Amino acid sequence: MNVHPMLAVIPARGGSKGLPRKNVRPLCGLPLLVHSLRCATMTKIIDRVIVSTDDAEIADVARAHGADVPFMRPSALARDDTPMVPVLKHALEWIEDEEARRYESVLLLDPTSPARLPDDITRAAEMLAASETADGVVACSRPSFNPFWVGVTNADGMVRRTFEPEKTYARRQDVPKFFRVNGALYLWRRDYLLGADASWLSSGKHLMLEIPEERAFSIDDERELRLLELQVEHGFLRLPWLGEACGR
Image (cartoon, rainbow, N blue to C red; front, top):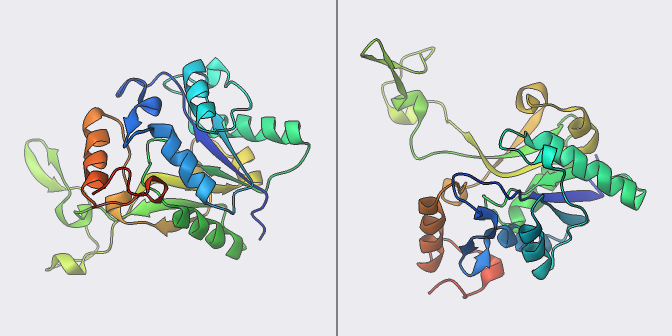
């Protein structure tokens, strides 16, 4: 099924609390949001990339790096408790009205996940295009520990397994694989997104795009930002839009 035209949205509101002004904080010499912009630009299958922001400084920084910022996001869609789905619906409807054309899919590229690669986006698009039934594709990864094996809760002062297995496993290697949604990317069909709400993951049919856990960063504080920067500087991660600018 067709996924084109594809609209990519980079949401970058100004009111971050955990890491103030995080969307324009420098990472390897570039504002954080610009990494998502560069990644999208290198991905040739995207038909249009926009930044959705409510903040004038963020808009100026984005435009200085070549971003398309066609509107300022309404403040009602930029609160701490605003879900992402309404933000994407607003962007899609605004762009479709401006261009007088219909998009077939919407790609969410959160600036706080700057270690995704162009190939991740291409694979997600190929997966969705090849499926007759899927509503979207969600990036997932396997954490370094398996909660099915080591996950516990404190129940009245006693340790109890979080997940009670249907059968007993003697070895860690035999436990079912565990994945987490890591936020690196989300790709939805247009019609599904327009009808979705906060329960999109459980209400729709989503394919899993597995990416390595070492690239599944979600930056919410200073430590995470600097940890990613160190990994790039020391060659453990390579971001192709940087070349050798932030590595040895």
